[in-house]
Length: 290
Ligand code: R1P
Ligand code: URA
Image: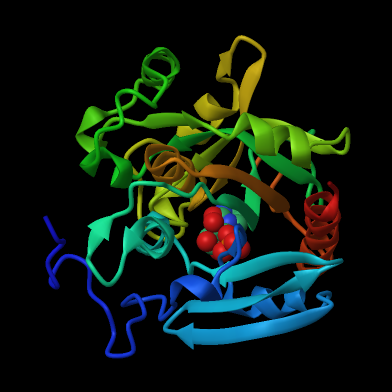
């Protein structure tokens, strides 16, 4: 059955609705960033740029870095945007946009996030790098899909019990990263653990300005949560959504974050752009390796 126009919306030029992209305009390896201004900070290192487009917060550039074809795309802030970006990217490679039917031979994309994040531990200082071995979704976006076969219920239950999580906020979902991309992008300088994904920057990450929050102790409980040797390293707003949808659709995903805030000791990087620039170089070099 063909997917109806209202379900998979195409622009008059045949591109997908929000991303304004056509299949030939994206590479097999895709870098996600939140901030649209970060796209050019990555592609300025490219040998050449073959294609650029922007609609709303979704800016995309495709080109080559040291001969490797890469697409860099801004997702904007939050898991809701990731729902749009990954579904539309998957449609570009795995749905025939003419017949509006899923293809028989599916393509698996490599998706690497280069983001900014807040550390939950004093020993993961500002300006350091974190790799999310797992994404911990506290936002519920993934719960609209059938995730039981890909989420780690045992780890989720331990987290719910440890934090006395109020299930009126929804059930946390824990999804692993791609083991292949972890191997490719890993090194000794990168901290590893669980990246927590929140559906907001302030209350959902335990920040109190003028509004009280549902659990003032949540961050300290998250800080001392251990599942074996694995701990929750950092807070941001996209990783679990990327891991969940990528895994369900057969893509590989990994999230790298530069730590700009340290929530354990209340510090903020004196030069967050420098930390991000260094993470960009780190990721590009790893991606260009064979
Ligand atoms: C919040 O300031 C934003 O920064 C982080 C969070 O995940 C959220 O998107 O990542 P980016 O710098 O990649 O946007
Ligand atoms: N981005 C977040 O979502 N949280 C932080 O603390 C820093 C960056």
